[in-house]
Image 1 (cartoon, one colour):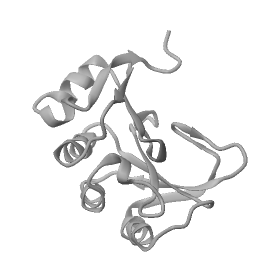
Image 2: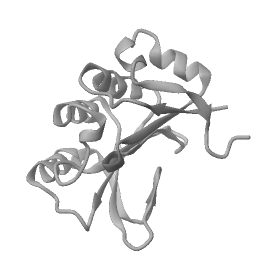
Image 3: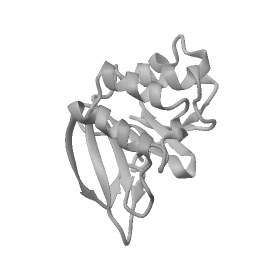
Image 4: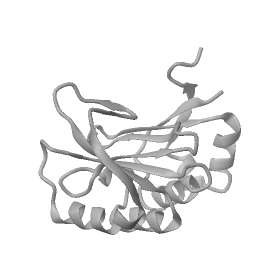
Length: 161
């Protein structure tokens, strides 16, 4: 059973780098979003261009992990999560909630190989959580004191009894 682990304090600096680095062991897909109702700045466009070789799809969507739009759509990018992508993520942002338009694409979500969310982010609301089993949580936090300081206690994940 997986639990929702709320990210209580934004992972910045070393904690953010640890989160992205450790995600490579669990996730293989990065989702990013650009909303049509918000301008896209040069840094966001440059980031999308650098991610293009790893992008496996993009389409219009009104829903992605953590978000449901009722009157609009956004462009949802599906990107292979590889070490090169992780390096871009930590180069372009110093913290998880830096992924906000117009500066960067929004809402980085990391998916496991089975398509289930590992990390869900709602950047502009400064909200994020991990969906982890007890074993995954222990593995994630082993040797990551910077990351441990930003996580809350486990809570039942959405849809779990």
